[in-house]
Length: 256
Ligand code: BGC
Image 1 (tube, rainbow, N blue to C red):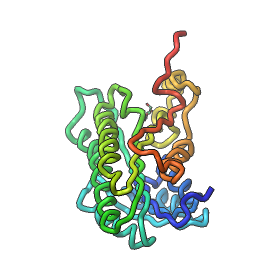
Image 2 (cartoon, rainbow, N blue to C red):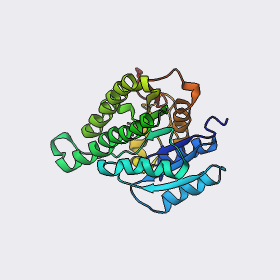
Image 3 (tube, rainbow, N blue to C red):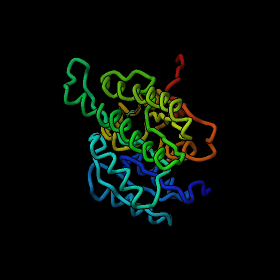
Image 4 (cartoon, rainbow, N blue to C red):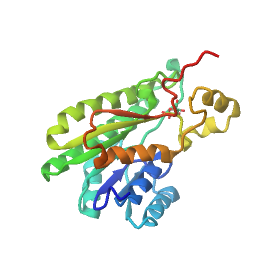
């Protein structure tokens, strides 16, 4: 499939994990991709290398997307690099494990600033560019099953993801007249660096797998495939929706 020939995509947090898989998937289908991450390291360079190996082009922009004042520059630089910008994937995210009674203001701010404020204002900068240039576009946010499902000890994370759900729904309505579609993908437990601790603890892993209908964790590529669908014209009548990629985790229920 070559659904993105001539298109340009920006994927935040694409130095590794799900973001990298999304960047490569879009590149495989013809998009030139702006890779963004907080740190300019070998991971970011590797993502760009993998993109270039597909025959599409990759370019890295280092930026902390929680810093609102830098976001217009990220959009401008993306457009300068490849001539336009059509697809924004708000993927960058962090989580902090802490019982509610122990969450610090610093932890709360980190999670909300990256996951929610970042996607909010980067989307705003992107859509300003689209409207000024009379172009349509697509936004796909990498949310989580926890935009809906409680996750004890991750209340700040749930607040950010619940917020992403409502931002997405609002923008779908408000931006439809500008020919901008907005959707979320909601991954469950996926094998990525965010889950390193869990992946290294066999007993935790076993109990989690027992709560997933398909009985195993997902791969970053499983999420990337759905993001590509939502970003493509195959989803031209899809806006305001969350697509779950969770192996059945969210509605898993069985009596032993
Ligand atoms: C979190 C993971 C968690 C998964 C399923 C994701 O949003 O980032 O840490 O394992 O949800 O609960």
